[in-house]
Length: 184
Image 1 (cartoon, rainbow, N blue to C red):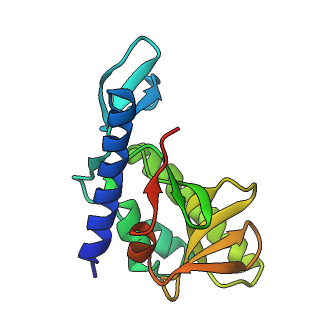
Image 2 (image 1 turned 45 degrees about the vertical axis):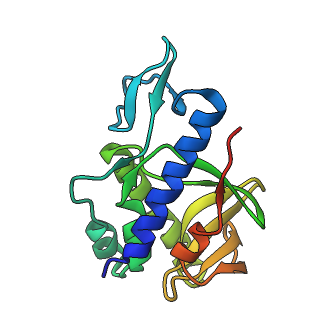
């Protein structure tokens, strides 16, 4: 079941990031030119080394069916929705707990890579006999990630390989409504 407030929160946050970036630098966010890593997010060249980009709604249907079937689990709907709403470069953010980088798929090819990383994370959690979480952000502290508890949908901070230790929000939508874009 889709959560309209989650999709709205993702889109609103990404738009706020782009607008804040434009206000500070008078152009859209920049990413290095890489012809081997195309994305629908690229809007125009900035110079020979950089392209301007902005988040784009995902038009095609992307699913986690292969991940769920391979691991014989069902991912929390918020995780599926978070990673299938927009294509985007990772977005720096800040909240009352510190700085972080929200992770997104840059393209359909990157979505496949993201799925592989999620599979690896879940297999590690299962091997350690820990509750399943799925990461969606990294923090400014080494080895600390922000993840969604696959059972409850609550957002937690956890050290890679350890149990979540600090609850940040009851849901991903609630968490996103309390972060602000960070323009460096």
